[in-house]
Image 1 (cartoon, rainbow, N blue to C red):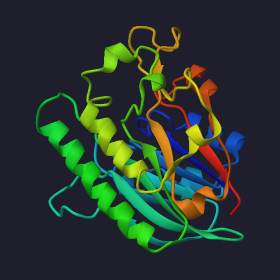
Image 2 (cartoon, helix red, strand yellow):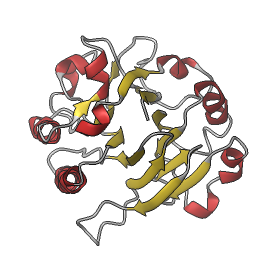
Image 3 (cartoon, rainbow, N blue to C red):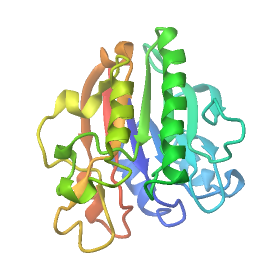
Amino acid sequence: MKVATFNINGIKARINALPDWLDESEADVVLLQEIKSVDEAFPREIFEDCGYTVETHGQKGFNGVAILSKLPLEDVTRGLPGDESDEQARWIEATVIGDQTALRVCGLYLPNGNPVPGPKYDYKLSWMERMQTRAAELLALEEPFLMAGDYNVIPQDEDAKRPEAWQEDALARPETRAAFRRLLNMGFTEAFRARTQGPGHYSFWDYQAGAWNKDDGIRIDHFLLSPACADMLEDCQIDREIRAREKPSDHVPVWVRLRA
């Protein structure tokens, strides 16, 4: 089973590029972030014609997450538990029925948190606490699951071309990294780092200041695998070349291959 995550930065802007990538990638399941569309306006027919079931949790103009799956989906839920007043569309879950295993997938778009300090950063940290609570609930079931998407977290300095430029940013603040480590320490495997070590691996390049041409990137799109899911891990890669194409997102896809 191949599962990918991709922050597309607007479904309307990526309406031609995304189906092309889907055809090439042959991903069974795709977790999308920043669809920037209400559910009713999402162009599901395009993806259904590609063989995908489409589940969305949309919001007008910003945020929004979705699951595309060639495999059967069950028990789709929307919204991160823990705060009924939170109206931001940043979390979607479903169980994917694979050939050998039922896998729970959680697609997420973690808040950016800037500027720091301020209410947006407080929201980011509280959202991460809620995510940790949900992760604990899923871990208690002792079934395979993963949490993947745009975490807006630079885990370590090696995950940025210029780490000094991010020291006071919400993506790399000590509190942000500590919250991410608390998640990992619950028993998760960070799939990319389980397969690839060292600097120079990025999933986001800003549109400004020629960041792509300078390879001035950061790695903020991650797969966290539960122990049972980590046992199924075969590979994890970043499709970096997608950033060089016409009308790209500022993110590129990241994917895992699982024995499922």
